Length: 256
Image 1 (cartoon, one colour):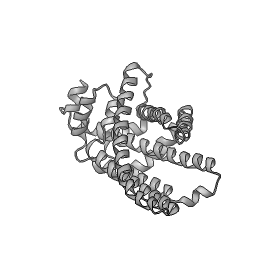
Image 2 (cartoon, one colour; image 1 turned 90 degrees about the vertical axis):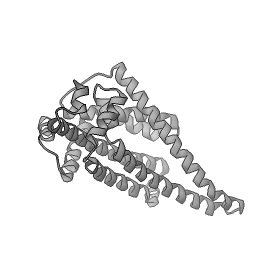
Image 3 (cartoon, rainbow, N blue to C red; image 1 turned 135 degrees about the vertical axis):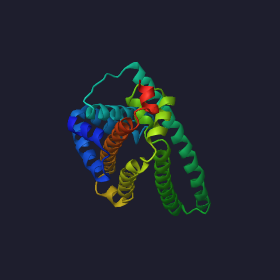
Image 4 (cartoon, rainbow, N blue to C red; image 1 turned 60 degrees about the vertical axis):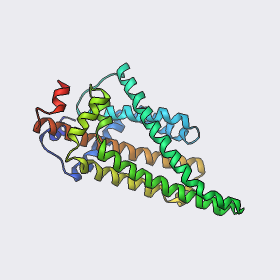
């Protein structure tokens, strides 16, 4: 995708261009990495029945990020030992954060247990489901905003560049200034679309339960691929422009 790479090096793209280029990149990565996409979808479906499988799904998502960036830059690399170690570290961080959020959700959801004491189980289940959905949606949005405001490019820098995690954090601090909204607007938009789709319980009754899981998983994965594609485009755009406008900055120093 030489034309896109040159465009990203020349100027900052508009929000609309990020959305459009995200579509183009998504189409191409799905075509070029079909086995990886199928594996991601299969593991996502299985993850609904065995949570441990989601670790493999996370690994594929991280590999996909690297593949997207390499595709845009017309490069290709093998899955080296160094990259595997980086993937394990990132998964570890994600698991710790997920566990923390899970504890918060569980503690707040326990406030509904008093309904069980009254014996009104159906009301309890509805109340619990409603609270969990609203809580997870709110935490998801808040988490995305905090993450993209503070660490928008850490994982992408760490996975796709020859830098340590500490260096990735330092470079992220340099290139994020003035570039938060470039990522916040498209990612929050896609996140809200995903939450909206997940809030339509009537869709679960269109197909049998297992088919519904597959349908929702497929939609969720397509949104994730689109989000990762946009994130990659914004990351490269911001990185290239930072090198161009700040040749003596920390990023150039570390890379050299």
